[in-house]
Length: 78
Length: 379
Ligand SMILES: Cc1ncc(COP(=O)(O)O)c(C=O)c1O
Image (cartoon, rainbow over all chains, first blue to last red; front, side):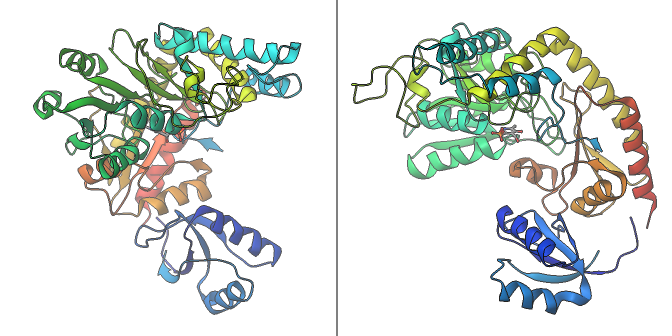
């Protein structure tokens, strides 16, 4: 597998929240993509949003400002 | 894209299935509701599909083929409607949550006692355990025909003999085998067979059902419009109306009907043989790669599934790399099969499942082997 690098992972309680996040990011030109949730993390939904690690604060601010539901944010080596 | 997630759903359907759905969407009335041409045509299509399914599964009466939207709904109808309150039920560690959760609910709400035939670290069960677990209160065995995680098949002839000998109801989850392996309710002594239309049968999502042995009564899970006996305050007791409240997925059933024609043309045996050959090819290829651990016993009867891990790599990340870097669709994680992951010791790592269909090719299998080789090499 490829060399690891710090990555932002945003988790969700369920699939509709994850899909809503994808729509939100697309509409707002936010980077990232849906990916399976890494095994080290736990959440209701098996999908997570994977994005650049340096954007954690920006994501949290935008998601909160727009009532985008998410469970947690993590920076992990992927 | 190389689609190797057929245990979740067969994504590629025969063209005639697609054509049948499209055609039904501009011509089909509501089955069993009305006597005009398009309503009658819908009733004919639905009945014809019941006949085809009855023949495929060895169900004596086509009117005992009940349509649902998937096997989960069928299993809920069977498990909650046929198992007596306060009785004891035997199931296995191989089960999907669509069997486990309805059983756990009966345990919590209706004082039903549960026992599970354990799976070993290779996902095998010991058939003697069924008899060992029987108590005077045992009313039913609920078991899968094949594990959706490993592909391990259960010998239903053997389980059926045990059920018959002890007068137990046998409810079978055929989600992974319908269309992919022969099933005969008579020879296997199956009382209720639950199937889904969108996997091995290659029909549309939103189709499935249960086949019920003559003489069995099942308390309806839902009641409502049946198109018959409208002044009766209760759900009609006749099959299939007793278990089919509400408009059926006629468009989907038209597609399922075409899928059954396709299956009859190519035959389930030919499908099983081809899928098996591809599975063997993949198994041989990946089990030779250093760092790859394949789960399950390949000397036993099985469906076309190969489940593996690479070293201690997170299965979700391997599946993601296969999808992103190689265009190969697989499924990682827990696969709704918690008890079997516990038996395998893979609850933390999960596992990557490759599930093969009739439409896969040797070239696709070889590409998937090469992808695993590369992923196992990278560090
Ligand atoms: C063994 C098994 N049982 C039940 C199900 C549930 O099937 P459906 O989602 O079509 O109801 C599945 C599908 O994932 C399965 O593999």
